Image 1 (cartoon, rainbow, N blue to C red):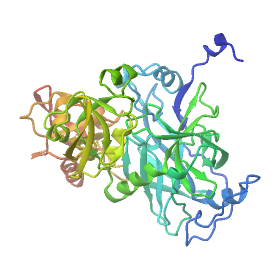
Image 2: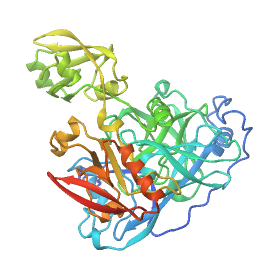
Image 3: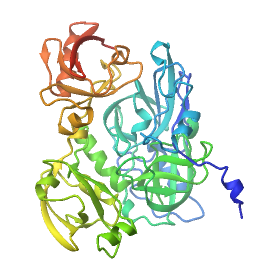
Image 4: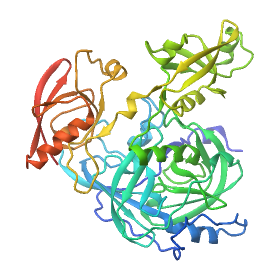
Length: 502
């Protein structure tokens, strides 16, 4: 038995599995694993369930569809390119990120006067159709200036970012190919059970194609990466650089996207996490079709039920999501939901735990009419609501489109809405486009733009949507302008800023 005094010294940390090389300018080579199968059908379409004594046939069949991903760009001195989860303030994992990934300027002090330098990072991905559609983690390509996809055969392609979703940490890339590529298909993660065999293939530490095996250790893990956490926990060894790689079942179908590890030292200790294919496939379909994800929105803030809370409410169980606040004029408000209600069912789906509700609502299409069952005043009550579309994320667009020849400012923008106005304390009489993120060392960052700024005009044109900003920047670039003039409001004050076009 391990003594408590020893165990207390071990501090486990959650890290994203992305290999980082700070000053490298080249890309990692890949290992040729196997001959490519016939390209007229998915590589994982006709694989029988493998015997336990060998996974060689399966790995030989699916490896050609697994790719390495290399990203590069400029980084500030003292800053490494280490894409990561947006951990909540005070997270016990924050000090690990500071020690492992960052230099002394973790919080950004003094970065504005430091010279840029090159970074390179490696991750993994997989091809899902013969035309070059590639799936990976968003944190693998986040803020990248250039994205290179390296196939199992060693061919390199410049990739275009077609869409991303921060809440599930997924991204879709497109590469232009003059031949059909071997590809794999998603399987059914909902039917996967604890104890099932799994095979992870990826690009650990930038070494190139590597395969590991293990089992599903647990389902439905919440690792505080986001509100939609529902990870598969696996013991198949994955390491930094495996992020975005596929997790296969014993029939050769992709049932997960490898995303994170739990580790005291950055290496595998037998605890890894993968996004289940049931979630990933629906997100990917929307990213391919629209470039973003539309999610349902109810307009409540919720919390878990403790035994004391359940007893005080006269409930026999701790199932459900307790409403702590209701957004004014939201679908919840219009449906008559109240603070203190416990949501038990949403559109027929049981809410066994508080964290079930965000996923159920998010998966509900906007404008859907749903029935909500709540516990109120000692009895069950049924209400009807019309789900709205989540404006906070579906209106986000990149103003720094990641095309090899794309023009960019280094801004992530979204339309103004009531949620954004409340969050950034922007008055109702202000019109424009909200800045929600500024890429480090970008032209916008050098001019001092920051989240919460509102772009009211680009040149002589008033703007109200991210697409209008992008269009005006393209017009300025077409006229061979070196910069674009923005009218920016901050804290109620307007000022003009000339931002260079990269």
